Image 1: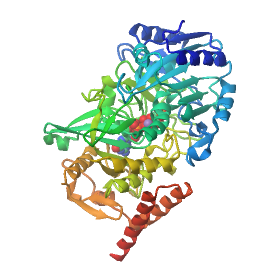
Image 2 (image 1 turned 60 degrees about the vertical axis):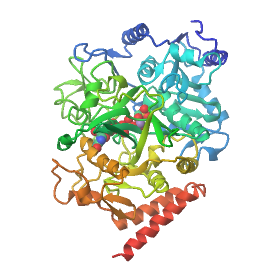
Image 3 (image 1 turned 90 degrees about the vertical axis):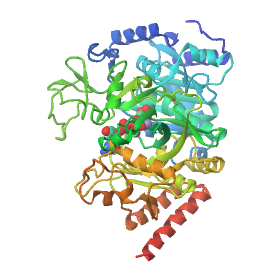
Image 4 (image 1 turned 180 degrees about the horizontal axis):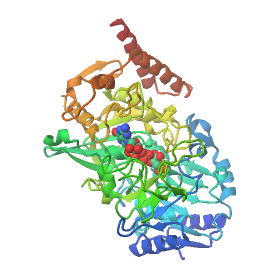
Length: 598
Ligand code: GTP
Ligand code: SPV
Ligand code: MN
């Protein structure tokens, strides 16, 4: 098909890529409804996607990925810069030359017999000065259909680009879907992403983690803003809506917090919750001196397991139509199911691998066999979310009252604490630790440092990223307050101490009170912790002693924690900004004083 644009650089790049990958056909996507129908029919005809029961789930599709391609592969994800120091110790690194050569060998001829789709897309509403345009070339119809949901794409983006607009070159190919021939490469200097050998999630939907976080974090540093792995949530009460952002590592509760339903006990207070975004926030300093946030995405790529009408009714309502389900279980009537989903397990179904499955089945090691992959997901249009904020497409974004960092910790981190000031809050973010989840390949449960939930997503040296956060604090006249939360603390029997989900509003409520200069708090060496009576626990029956355990700051634990912060900082070989080195010293000092106080 002839290129529908006069953008000569874009046309030249598409031609050059076609010469490398050798697709049989090139199809430019315009984003129209008729095109969606056509692509879906093609995908169904080839078996790449299945149509689900039109009565149960109208407009919904089902897909299984290759069994070795079920989550982001961080060990195959690289930042390609001339110098290693620019990628830093937490990123995999290779030179741009090596990256283009190694991936180029895999891409070469890999689209023979296939179609290459050209997908112009915008992260952020089309035409906003804060949005960024990318063009993804891909030989995956499944990826193309996902990009239609997750981004604003098609003709209107080409129009916006005109004949010379800047865009991120996003090349994606499935190649053999072989984990040994898989690379996810970022070339910040060239504003380019090359991803080959995977067809799933953050590896393949290049607007998401690759552009909106890794490339965008690099751009944000030079342009003076922040690109973060954060949800954006509006909390309305008494005619006033305030907004918070929260950064939690993958599969640690962003989608759930962004869509929370106020608990029955707080009903009398008349809260209304608005979802602005569930995964990524771009933050800028507004003319009024506050920090403003936009959600650059157009849909939700959410974790399926655990989603049910009790835990997240908002998400469940969102995914009843026009949704793509990946790696969940398929029921006989053409519906979907997953562990901790809606209703009991089906008596019989096909599991995420396409194998017959019955409840109680065990794997070779005798462990329960899951019907849905733990990282199975839904892709759904954000506009379908019943709690979607009326401001979600406001090109200026929403003003942020509080920034929340958090991780999944069985012990040590209390339910919530407030930082003493911006720099201390940056320290709390920079030292976030979390137990590994199924969202990335690796050992489950292992505690690792995941600063600002950006460990896998920061496109440059993380020490410089910390310095950028410190610098932003100096530049924001009215900075948000910074908090740290942990919904995942457990008791001696391994049971969660905090009910989580909707009840998390009780904690957010305290934060907003703090923003208003109210909300009783106790000063501890790590920050301000709620006074026990300061959280509204109406209607919540916490076991005796649970609240004390949840809010406990154990000095010995935290001395070890501070040691571990120091070890983590030492990996950056003197590059950690002095403001954070001072914060570490101050934390240790406060912990010593706490001993003296006994
Ligand atoms: P990504 O999309 O990977 O970035 O993840 P996310 O941060 O949006 O995670 P999500 O909200 O999908 O939650 C992941 C898992 O954590 C699900 O299994 C949830 O059921 C569980 N979860 C979410 N919130 C809570 C909570 O407050 N308490 C507990 N115990 N579990 C939670
Ligand atoms: C995450 O892993 O943080 C996700 C899913 O949100 S993915 O798009 O695969 O990165
Ligand atoms: Mn995420």
